[in-house]
Length: 317
Image: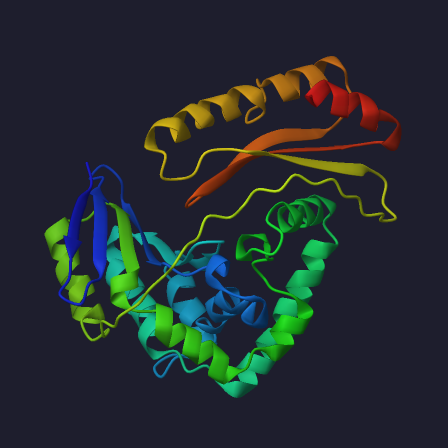
């Protein structure tokens, strides 16, 4: 059973007490991802995620990492289509430090110009890394064309052109617009007392100023498509997508989860058992669900030798 509390500045805190463990996971979730960007600032959500680890008014980049590492904990972040999350995993006795570090990153990051230029180069290398991963590239190309001319189809990292357009002013404009407490949620699970941790979070985050914010999500049209890209690699990588239910469909998202598990989401699934185990045509084959606000999809992926492509495709169908 989870508990919920909203601070005066609009910051929502959701927690589930698990008293039989000795650890806590705590994440600050921002309702801002690549889906609310446009082509001019494509990749800005992800860029900001990187910049919050580059130093604050109180800590250097190395101190942010080492304060958690020295305790045997983890600190990390990720950007998705619809949100950005910064999180720590620590022993329960160390959670005060985790809250302090995360609040410092959210409230006091410097966005130093020199760090911004260096991190731009790092992110461009990350972009190239994914382009060298056939599986990631196949899904990115598919998503880009399924949701053509819609922000949902844009790469979360952005493009090399859009990354080079992003400067400190554009990052801060986006940051100040969406990184507000009434557009954020802190989620906690582990060994803690809910009332006590609310006080600790409020002490660190109460200076976070509430502002008007409007995150307008429009339904993305799912477009059928077929595309190929030639690369000099050993295998053919096949990615397929079926239109599915949106995240808000409380009833059918659970039905879809069961369908996905049976169809291709586990090693006992139809795809794995028939096409890999019985026919021996592939090493990697699976299905997965991607649920968004107002739309969703069921994805299928397989990699195989070129001579097996037709049989694998027909077997999936």
